[in-house]
Length: 174
Ligand SMILES: [Zn+2]
Image 1 (cartoon, rainbow, N blue to C red):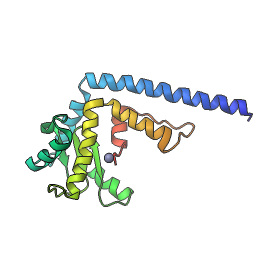
Image 2 (tube, protein in one colour; image 1 turned 90 degrees about the horizontal axis):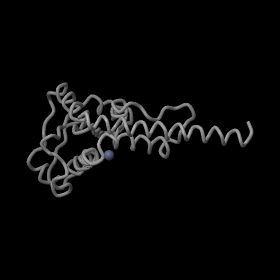
Image 3 (cartoon, helix red, strand yellow; image 1 turned 120 degrees about the vertical axis):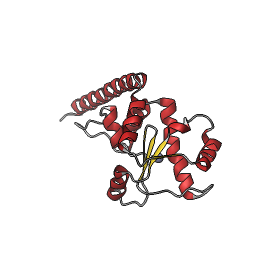
Image 4 (cartoon, helix red, strand yellow; image 1 turned 45 degrees about the vertical axis):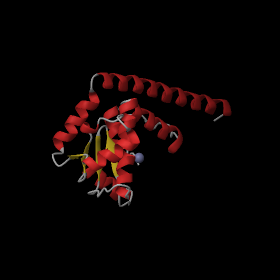
């Protein structure tokens, strides 16, 4: 195919991607307004009765980093997360944390103590919660967009943007 034609197709793909992201942003906004994150948190926690909240020591450490920017009362951990466990298996890593709105999924029980590596891991995952608090669901669209355009390159015909709920389950926030 001619150079001009391939440039045209590239431009067309780009336009499609931008349009999809734009629609995604609007959808995320609507979802935020309609309290979608709260609903998701509620559902997550309903199917995860084993989840726990931050311990006092963890909250104290987190406050040094995030101050009042996170609603700590609403943060939950699932330390027996199937998704995180599967993710760890797939990527052959010992530790996997997946943050979904205000629920943090770990593939194993974490043993936090001030300054230790599990505490640093927890703080890292809380950073994603903080991003969620500030940007809202849009954050997930942006993260996926960044992946589609930079991380993996954009393959023709691929659909980089899914509904937020799919994005959420697909994103592994490492
Ligand atoms: Zn991360």
